[in-house]
Length: 66
Image (cartoon, rainbow, N blue to C red; front, side, top):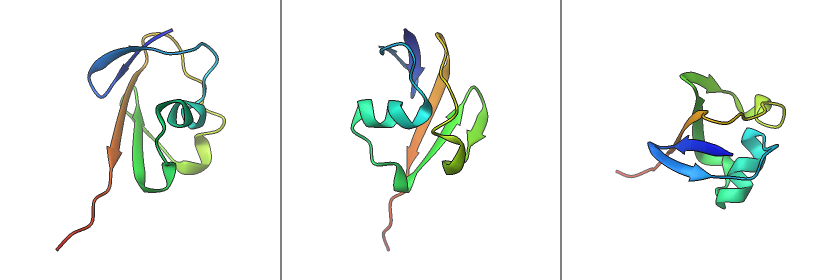
């Protein structure tokens, strides 16, 4: 299925959830924020939130510094 991830089109397997998308992308989910079609997805929602073709996903990593 085609998804728009951080503004770039990507072809991903069908049947993904937000949690399995992160696994597919090799992203550890502890320090990222996810937005799906303009809605922020809480960590506890990721395993149940199914993705559909043409979904828009923004993944933002938190970076510490000082």
